[in-house]
Length: 630
View 1 (cartoon, helix red, strand yellow):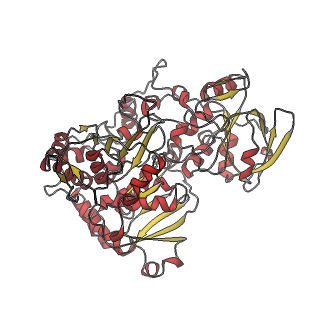
View 2: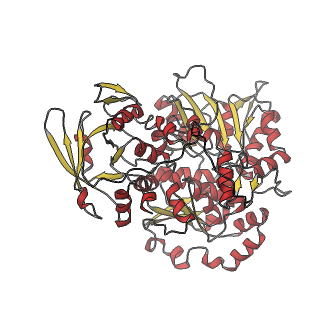
View 3: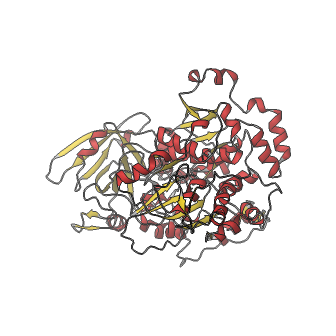
């Protein structure tokens, strides 16, 4: 897989970062992001670069192809949400707590088709990497992107990463890299919504389980754990990811790790650290942080996403037992971290994650609670401390960058490979309505791209569409039986896996349809969540609403992404329905289509569904995909 990517990069004059170089969002912040720039990236956490005042937008792969080939790239005009920050962080509060609190205010869909712009005097109190953390997790509220005004903290980071000329250029136009005075004076006149957060009053937050917008301040969290019966014992603490693996993050976490020996404490839970880049790892190693973590038994993983996308070997004595973990990551959907639906994953800052790891107790509040050390003495953890930037400068380590060589090597793929498979174009629309499609699954509740196309061990098949399609919708809950990966097969009058049933329908020449609830496809921008259904001949996703990136990905693959005009029509759909979509010959912007339900008892019901397709996107549908239309 990596050899293929390396050789293709060389052939087309693209720079290549080798495995182990780091998570691309951290690498971009260290090398490419700059104030006032604009960038698209094929991951939902691309807005991480907003920490340096860049308009950075997550997109699907097909959108990136448009940009790379010089074609026009389109985006629905976003709303603008203004977040006014005042005060200064202190004690246990961290930049992560800003976005954790905001997630509770906006929810996972409150930022959809909106840009979040931070302003106010509090912005200058945050480091550039702290700002990046906040922008990074804007993806968890559905935001198109997030950004901060340019300031001296950004300048300091640019200079520390060897980009002093960029800082000078930004300083020369600093007035254009922040909100106008009229906007900050009367924000309600210019923003579609204004939210106020006082950093001086901000508590540490811990969000979860199962959704990143279940926000709870630490002062109320113990009561929530007990009231809801969450597993109180915390089993693993994980620090890192693209959201929280900066030098400042690791520095503050290391200050707590050192207190374990100083105060004769024992660490109650397993600790895992994954640095965000080779530069961070090498610098943290040189400055003693890695050793501080190892001294308390931490496992240091590769400079990669790792456990955040399920790439670790979790050891549990009983996979059926409910258990709790705390991470400094960005997402905590069911099964995302370790594939176990019984794992209650909570998201917090690196500091709070470390404190809870030491205590091993979800009800522990480091702001007020004590721990009993080896001598039987009650001790309190001191507030975390750390450096924003390394005093000795960053160490480069083996950065892993391979510049374009100009070598036009031949690209060949073994037809027997189980990891790589050349794509064949999807078939064009046949000009007819989609009639009597079997319902593949009616999804109940949250259905993220992790539910649609799981990560973890499945990522080894990202280059092989047929193989990775075996995981399609295996995490989605069937509304008719409450189970995952178990749907009715009308050809056999029995139940089977979602992908297995879809394959049988495809082999029989039957297109199928998926019905879902709110914010379908939230989370990762992974395009496989759209390509897999298309490959298995799912032609329509009918949902109450869509996440922005996933809706576009579906359109790019020539699928129909429809929404209920009346959301209560979701309740009319029965397990054994055959469903028709009529009116496609007159498919045009703003014109609804007709959905007809053919029930098993011979009766029918119909209702209208709406869509957001423009003229160009309708061309994609008719051609079978955006690539076919070029």
